Length: 392
Image (cartoon, rainbow, N blue to C red):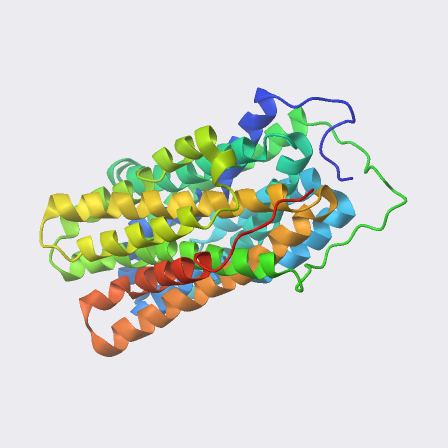
């Protein structure tokens, strides 16, 4: 139905590798921000609400542009839409530090977020086309790339990239945009264009808002992402506020590296987990417990708790992302994914912003954890009320 692979071609490890690289591109440039937030905060004189807006703006674009991304997929195909998204991410990321100035930072962050928003419904569609019988495996593969894309800048920006660039946060954004651009060329070079199949059918793109599964998945995705992005946004300033700035790199690294075991487990056991309520409920409880662990005045406990927040968030995220290719018909995957993403990332923007406003108003350092707590509660409550039915 969509531009992806020639009919009769059986996809294998090369296409899994490309999905993995595209997954990295979904987060690489976005998660380059938290390690340099204190520098941006200092140079551009941002308050906590503005910090929340900066880190939440890409997430808001994930929601706003998800449905136009579905339309683009319907018109030009999933492969071409994915490449267009990658190019927007690369260009927007590289130009964020130009000036540096607040208007340019926010404008190019919006461009970058729009690119990711186009990619996100394209990837589940490619999974459904390339791996119709192995959707959980393929989703876990690109989700593994997504997690590595979160971990690499979080762990390498402070000790390696910034020293090489003389401490320039603006130049670091350019560095992280280069591998994203290379991925676009790899996809163009190694996945030939295929004409759309079933041309006689009208391709639908608007989400089916009457399908309760779209709403369920959207709220759960929003809760998971609010927990994860909220922690990434506020953990550095939280650790500075409690007098432990030396834990910023370790905490962010643990938060992001802790996600990888979840992706490997779902590669192994994914078919048994997708569409079930228990994993969401159990992992939301783990998230709440570990968020409380960040309040413990012990460096090892703080780092370990951050790692477990990452693990539980990744577990729930991958299960949510794997659901559209498994639950929807092939011609409707992009519609369900777009609706889920539009709802989920709108929630993800709102929750951390409210958390930042509460922190500014109360000056209580514990308020930094509110977005994570609220997100985990959303996942647990919604997850306890549904059981999704598989297609066919």
